[in-house]
Length: 78
Image (cartoon, rainbow, N blue to C red; front, side, top):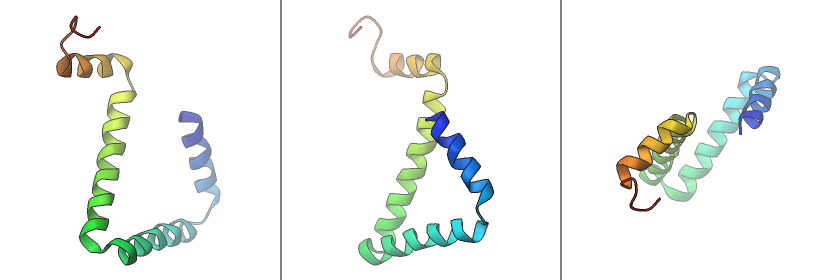
């Protein structure tokens, strides 16, 4: 995943910002046409929350283990 993100950021540095934002707003416009405003807002919100939670939990394996220990008590399932 880290390799993918580094390649993506390298390509974004070589690409003009107008192209990136045009693509982003095209995707948002298609979502708005298909689903409507509130459903699109819901999709975008949960996508951002999932990205930030995933990047927060999976950057450090110890943090992820502590998170699992809070949800599933140690010794019960492991």
